[in-house]
Length: 302
Image (cartoon, rainbow, N blue to C red; front, side, top):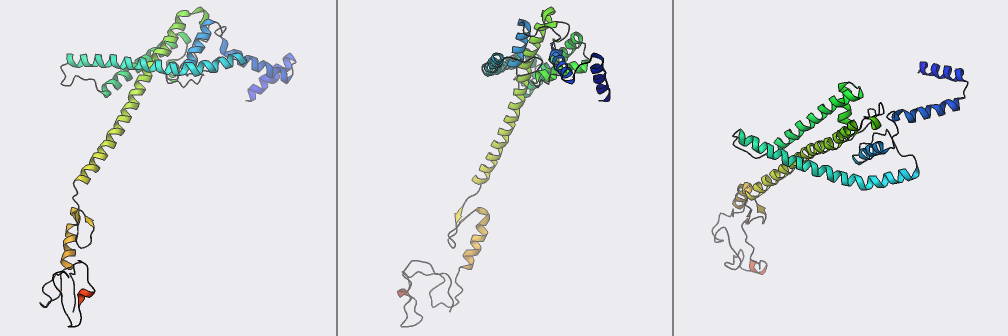
């Protein structure tokens, strides 16, 4: 920070400019720094910008300035991004079909018992293809851009995952947009094809997680259904409640407790109903005047 302030002070003192003019020079230099590749809004640069917008990468190396350009960019993004997603999805599905055919033929050639391509096989195939694309692209960009291999690998990963920080942007050196049309085409093919492959592998990964979640839910529902089907309910006559098999002992205990404890035989047994017997404790006392229903009396004490 101190060195920067000293450089700024020396620059202002040397050329005798005001701080406002120095700030304006900073803005101009900062805005023009990403434009080392030449005019960004020629056809090659505009096509590259449109591809970056369509792929939702958004490096930020070039942006529209005029009101008309900003309005058109928003309209183009609203229409182009959904169509781009459909395009990448379609390419990814066809890549998955092609990978399944290759895996099936490879299994038949190796005489495997199961020749069908599983989700895990497709995930491994698309993951391997994504790794090949990223590593190959990193080698190409490292050669043309003069970056280290790790920085090129970082750029490829950030690009194909649509993160797009913008700290590393291809086609910005040595008038590449004008003087290297082959390199421009290679960069565009790398972006489009690489996004399709990475999107296919990510979709397979997400589909695998969703399938695992659905299988767990179905397994839990099947276990609950089997546990419910294994329970047989019975109605306990004493309490009038529905009891499962585990509560049958409790029901039998209740029935045993409800048996009569009367030891005399004058009442005619342990269980009676008012329709069958009329039991007299006193000559002038008739229980039938009080008990008129068919409720069973199972306990009586004298």
